[in-house]
Image (tube, rainbow, N blue to C red):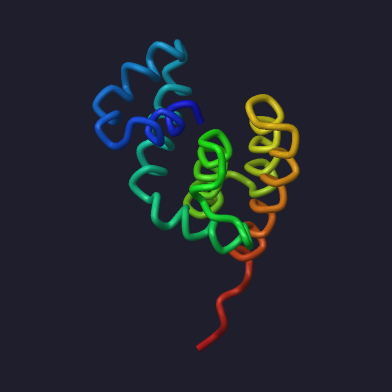
Amino acid sequence: MQSLYQLDVQGSEYLVRLGTFLRENSEDEVVFEMADKWSRKTWENLAVCDGLIKTAAVKWELSRLSQVDRSILRLSAYQLKFCPDIPGKVVINEAIELAKKYGAQQTPRFVNGVLDAIFRKLSEKEPAV
């Protein structure tokens, strides 16, 4: 989440320094690899993630959200859409915990509502053709 925050603040040029940032913040190789993959893949799929958030966050412009809230939602939207090995409820619960730690007072409730809507939308069955 912190790396996505930095990408949001500094833009794509931050990708060059991403590995260094993550290495400084994690001594565990598995954690480093997951964080690097999720950060890069979330950024690569930003349009998809932002589209999911915009659809679920009715009456909210993405630009009005704090960078912390956007970062939490983007990472979680990526995981809900592209990481089927992670249960949706786990993604949502982890996002709520991040929101409690880093967000404003109303952030956990907002994050829960947006991610629940995304999860439900992604869980809908495709109609048979």
